[in-house]
Amino acid sequence: MRAVMGVERWPGVDTVRDVGRIAASAWGEVSDATLEVFAVGDGGPRTADSFPPDRMSVGGVQAVPTPAGLLLSPKGADQRWNPQDLMAALLGLAAAADEIQGAVIVPLGDATPAGDALEVWGAAPAATRLQLAKLSLRVLVTSDRPLLGFHGMSASLRNGRESDAALAVASQDQEARWREIAATGDAIASRGTLLGPNRLSDAPGSGAAGGLAYCLAALGATLTRATDYLAEAVGLSDAVAGADVVLAVGGPLSPATLDHGLATTAARLAARHALPAVAITTDLSVGRRDVMAAGLSGTHEGNPGPEGLADVVRRVAQTWAPRR
Image (cartoon, rainbow, N blue to C red; front, top):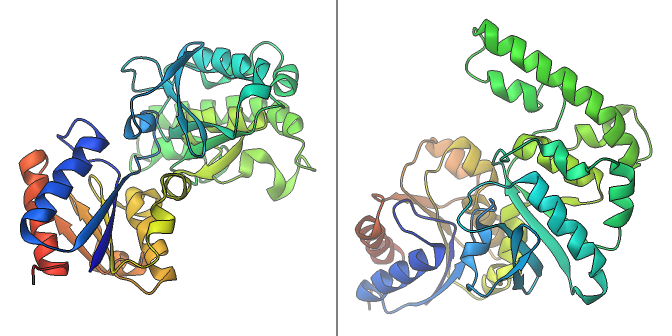
């Protein structure tokens, strides 16, 4: 028997690579089935930590060479993108575009940046777009939220707090500001029309990361679902062929992470080969019907930390691949 495991993260364990190491060790204690572990990451700013530590400094950020291209990361241990640092790095990479193989990948997830997202445009966004035109720029997001509209960025502020009058006013102010910005950005993006559903500001994912996704897309970046792209990049997608079960290790399984996290990506990959897909989580806050609708065959909960992870992986191995 052969099992394939994708690892997104585990609360209480420092790195994704540590999560994979602990899971593989615990699995081997109770099962003789082959387990292949792939560190995928969560698609957020620190996704590069899922890869080997070889990295270089580019402007105010760091870059990690991967099979899919150059994966960027905030400098040091920063958890959020600084738009000014990111702009400086992208302009530096564009100047050396002939030496870059593959895409330049910016994992945003849905983390609010450390600064005004508009700072990546610089003083002249149209000129900045031309400077970046030589790059194959890809932005990874974990939200389908558009920039504007009823389900847009400002609406997300009010979610669950519609009775807060001050928040409603702040949301309206934000909507007005981004409408003015979108008048410029949609024109720069040249999507064929400034009206109707083809506007960049209406595109799924453009409202991710506090509007930073939109600002980068206006400069020519392609918005991409993070976990699907990363699963392909690290080889998880190919490894599913010939497996007997597909496992996804992550943190809390909520409606948001079920829609945009690794568990659903694993379920889609498993479905191509009629395989069961199992989510391993620290907190299951979705119902069984939602789990089934996502294509998952089962879920297992464990406590945060190394011991909690090891314990739940042992239980999963005993359930899905017992020693023979």
